[in-house]
Length: 424
Image (tube, rainbow, N blue to C red; front, side, top):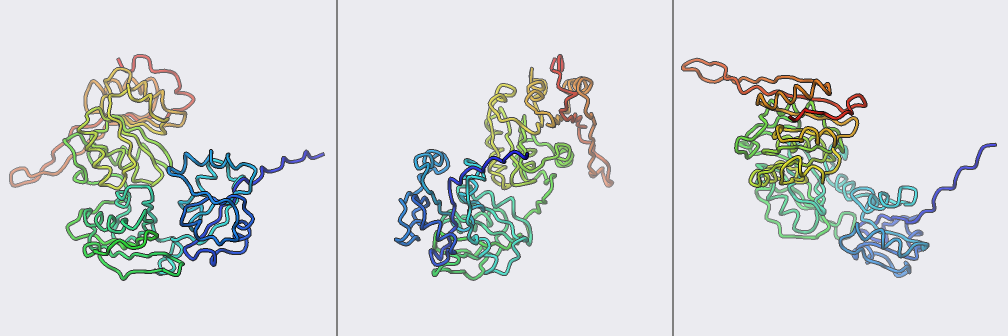
């Protein structure tokens, strides 16, 4: 006899997408859920779109929203709850928060076309060719990572002031010739789309807070080109000499092998270049850089903002002392401070099985530590040498940069024993 399957958990919340067109644009199934709800939760603007026939108790989200969600839902447990969302609840919407807190089986989502879908329809842009950047609750510096010649961006605005912030950022980053259009109240009676205007010439006054900024990226002739893969020009960074140089940086990132969603510890951040280029590989990548010098730590923050990854967490302090407070990494890069007692051990112990550790050095003392670590742990020990062609009188010759010794290792079940003496 086949055992009965357990019944799925009851739906705790129905999430209903609603557009700028309000009740008239809500399909019948979504209308039925809203009319039947005993509790209606949403933003004040969304709640105001509902007709009197939606008789459930109306509750506006508090701020900050996420910490309040569990308590608010618990206070109305057992009642039929409907949550309102702008457009598609699972596209930068409340649907994600609710499924993360309650689980997907406890949330029933009734989507509406997103503002991005509306915008692409108005502009004639294929959705799959557009990059979306949200600035709702996030700094405008995030747009910088998406700036590449010819790319199309849709920027989700936080409020009416966002378009001017985007225009200012484009000008500052050398993308003033980019064409901008503002799309307001998409799908509603007050919908408006502006004519294309360059960021250099953008002078529009703040309009409707419900807007999207469409950007066609064009680089000014004198603006350096920044590629999409690791190995940005050294001139992209503000630094005091403590910088992993371009060719070594590209090799190092290749060995670190960032993947979506992974977390990097960048120990001995210097100018932050390794962590910054780790973050630029995918929007979901995360990184923490540890730098003991406050001036350098501030410089790292500046570099991260300028290169479009303001989410880089900068910890000012000495390793290994500050490492215990950090979340578990997927990969660790040690670019400085290898001779600090206990540092290599602490980084190794923090890694889970499958994690990667990469350490670079130019000194004999640190090189000896890495050779000993390789003897105990395995991995690959390589020496990287780069030479640049420079003038020699009327001719050209090679100038050798200091060679870099690199140890790279993956933590496996066979390498779990401690590293006695590796940091002596």
